[in-house]
Image 1 (tube, rainbow, N blue to C red):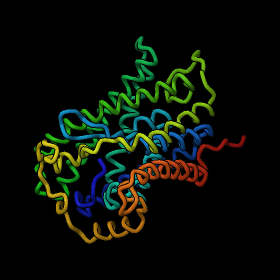
Image 2: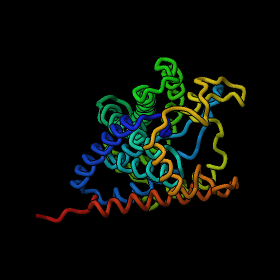
Image 3: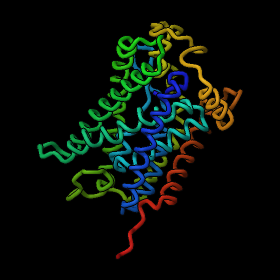
Image 4: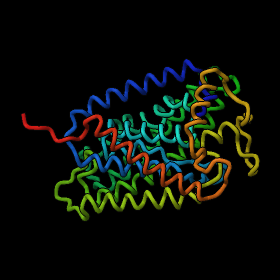
Length: 344
């Protein structure tokens, strides 16, 4: 769901930057009051896990499309909505600047579409009510239900935001109704799969260190592993996914690309039928953003420049995951997040 700059007018892009920046500012203010130092290493490892997970495109059978996880629900369930949102900003900014994944001018919109809904809407409307509910459901059932419902809802909202933002940008080649009719169903399927993946990770955390899950009742639930062992296992998963499984990711276009360009080469529909080389809005701001991105991206499209070697994908997965983890830690220290408060 990473939008390209050509899908946005400068005015809409600036508005989405402002909305995302205000939300980030509020999140930073809230996190300065946090008193959970164990969250820092968890934030680093889980942010890297989401980066690696986003490299794995899974095929949506019978469509010619693919999807990848967004990760907002996963991060907010472990870190809370504010830390989860800031972690997603780190992930999306690194993808944009160093791997040319998503447009730089569109970064504010991508943060809103992929991070805001999962971290805030998914957490406050789905995760917390289900985990705190008084029904007779077990913790495992609550986790699975909240993960799937949360991912489905937030991907639907994100997909609709993409349609709305392109419509407001005046892209006449994308009729609102037809674009909606393509974006919503394909992201329903993508959300269902992400929900299952999210539930699997959170169930592992619940079995290992139940106190790491937000709003989950950890009383009387023994931890099977130490915090260090749990984070080491997740770090190994990051290395395996980013450095290995990324090599077998689906080559089908993701949900947004599929809606825009179709997949006629594989025998599927053209959908909106846009020209991949010439579509959308042209602007000086987009040209400037593209020039900056071309300079900063040292592994464009998760590969070595002018080289199709699979090693480039492996290096991208490992380097990108390490960068995300490192930047997350640096931001925490710079902002003074998660430090034990001194007794007054």
